[in-house]
Image 1 (cartoon, rainbow, N blue to C red):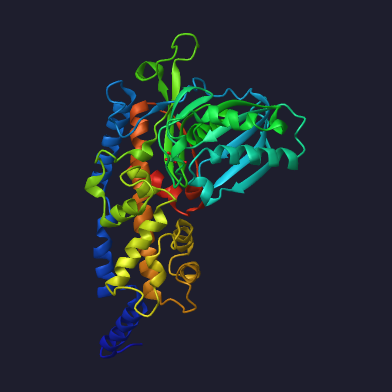
Image 2 (cartoon, rainbow, N blue to C red; image 1 turned 180 degrees about the horizontal axis):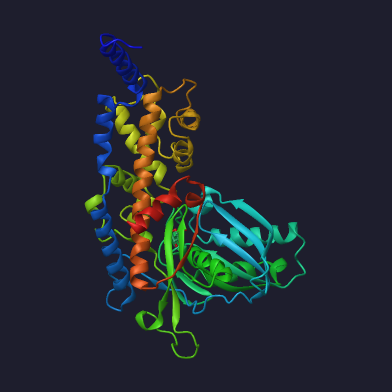
Length: 450
Ligand code: GLC
């Protein structure tokens, strides 16, 4: 039994033990400086609320005749008036162009929600840089050439196939097969195509090839619309399509009487609705997000292929998230707050820290830095084991950037849900960033309900 005299001594020893066990998690002055530095990436609930309201107003303006030209959120009518019933059947060819790859696949719809659609064969083609940034209409020839390659490889030459083309860029549609490109986004730049009907260009490129005489082009649509339609095929409550991938965008089902910019027939079809492609990635082009932009965002924008455009998308999506992190890390390194003993020259080169690296960093269990170190080894091309405090800082920066992205997406979704005023809505989500980031789902969800 302890004597009264030995109690203070024992207490002191226990206290020392507790202090030394937790030494590692007490913030150092350097950590505090890093956190102070990154505070500009932090947005609070009040700011998120402002973003939500501004987004909602921009969507409302985008739909009106007078507001459409001026609003940053254009809200393009898609000419899709009905969501699928689940009874659709048949075999079609789907083309998908919008990120770094061009995909071709065959989809068979079974005619009933009790069965699953069949996918396959399918093939992915990496789009060469010179095609993404080309003068003429090489991009469309590239697409036609690869459809040919696909048909040949899978011996589909004798089959009559209808084509649905997912073309994920801002377009003014004039029907299901006509889409005039407004501008390029996500690193594409083929100036000759802007202002032209991409549906028509694709038809012309297909017609040039005899081996494609049996395919028939039936529809052109945005990836957000495709996402909504495919989810609605199996879930009748689905009303919103969200893409969080290389770019970020959303579409939703709107009452036709609110879509002033739609000049097509309104009464012929029994449906009184229309899917609207918001193209909300452009939100912020009228200064709506200036109050939360950081110098790092401005740098990313300045170095992008389309400065001043798609501001919201540049704060969120996979094409830019890694770049924001790179700029922050470079600044912290320049200020001697991190990487004191590591060669960080590669951080000066755009594109070295990719969004997939940020996903890896955040996939580490708390307190472990294995994935973080592996990612840094690849980014910095170093054999040196990066010290723990540096790994901690890198994780902190990634978390700040991704948390902000999720809060911005949450604000956007909240704006749409408020606008739609539905009580029970299913949101379809797709995109590489949403699929690969370990925490996006939870963080977006939390923001929407806070
Ligand atoms: C960009 C495009 C948009 C697309 C989104 C996601 O924002 O402008 O059309 O839906 O990326 O791919």
